[in-house]
Image (cartoon, rainbow, N blue to C red; front, side, top):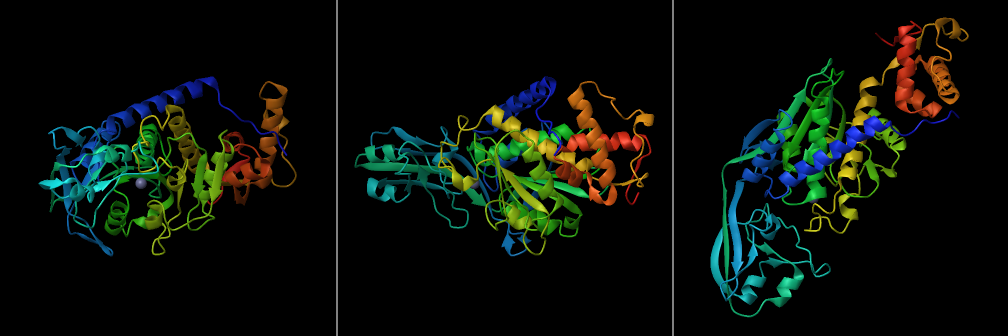
Length: 442
Ligand code: ZN
């Protein structure tokens, strides 16, 4: 087994730490907005992301049929509060977008506490947290508050006001296509519909935004499609409108829950043996952080649309702690303190490593397959100083030469040898320069 080279040069990690801080800063800018599956909060969030990448905003009219679904009415909210019998505003949407049930219909009414309570949501098991609640498909209204506050409410007449509208309009989603040398695409998708919640889903949005930003000025092999859409209905809508183009997607990831302190979790594509599954497994093995890899399951995020049997796209889901494995999820505790710039930075780094592998992962054919070529006379031996590095370098050349038979990709060779992918990719580059390899099928 060859020695594995791990770690990063200081110059690279300084630059990436800066990326983590910038991601955290963008998250702070997006945090207060009241996103939903439609409406101005979602639109405004995508416009903020447009300051970083040239995202195209699409508007799909309410009622549009998308496979078995219809685009819902557009919801907008301006204000929402509850006034206590003494006239004091005790619940106020302007303090946190979580205080109003997402998609609440308008209300302006006075009522006794018992009646109000039918519209109040709390988390008795976490009495200081405010829950996140939605009611997309049933027209109702409600408020969310801490259980401690609920228990302190006195009998009397309360006033409930929600200044919202639910009417025909549009559903917005954002899309960016970066054109590469081929029309084959890499899809990176993030749901973008949660209000003031950080890990689920702002961390996914900022990771995708910064990944796209980092690729903007690069010469690319693949075309990249970045999608910021409301969960479920957004991905369904995109697939319905792009049914004929979906087969161009050769690799894909669904991004969410990428800012918490937990280990990485990769859920494989439905295919299970797609190149994206191998690329992510390799990037995680060499990322220096803990990780778990599991098989596909048809729930969680939009992988369940991309991997529905009629599409079965090679799309996996790369997160940190899965949404159903941390108690803060869908509560006010999923806030700016729950996520860290370091975790975001590490997530960005792994996503970048995956893309770098996919970009360079090709198959080659050894042009001197009968016994090994003389590397010394080509200046390919001992070219790098430091005994261990020189050894790594020479072994990487031998692995790459031996398995470049048109059957094994560079990623296969990296996995067989135990070397990190970029070391094998560098070896292939040197061998190409010396005409010892040619690209298979080229
Ligand atoms: Zn969620």
